[in-house]
Amino acid sequence: MRRRMIVSMIAAVLAASCSNGDDDETPVAQAQATLAPKSGNATLAGSARFSGAAGSVSLTINLTGAPPGQHGVHIHETGDCSAADAMSAGGHWNPGMHMHGQNSPTSHLGDLGNLTVAADGTGTLTVSNAGWQVGTGTPNDVVGKAIVVHGMPDDLASQPAGNSGPRIGCGVIM
Image (cartoon, rainbow, N blue to C red):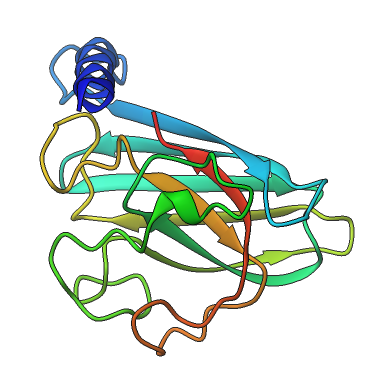
């Protein structure tokens, strides 16, 4: 509980100090995660960066050293990547209790879709979600959650998580 409160306080300070350069515009809040390998994958690395204001938050994930192909990517409910298989990150983040699917207003807030990794092990995914918030401490706040990269594609239909296989990368959103 104390860690969550500290993370929320740090996020609030960051959100208040970040701006898009124009004093007349809404401040731009930011959060990030550093992705590390899990479940026997020794080479995956990457970053996830959230930016925006309530109603308009975007996320860019960049990977290196990942296996080529499509990989399901999700925001998970617990900001804990300590387990070797990243199961400590819990299930998909779903404060609205929606069905799993494509990133949309009717799916989990944690549904990000699939990231395609090229033969050289690199991949990028950029998505937005009007329901996300950064540093607000509300149930829709991404801070304190985890980004998880799975070993297989998300089928965007199977409940509750898309049948995307083992968790091969994980990072805590701060």
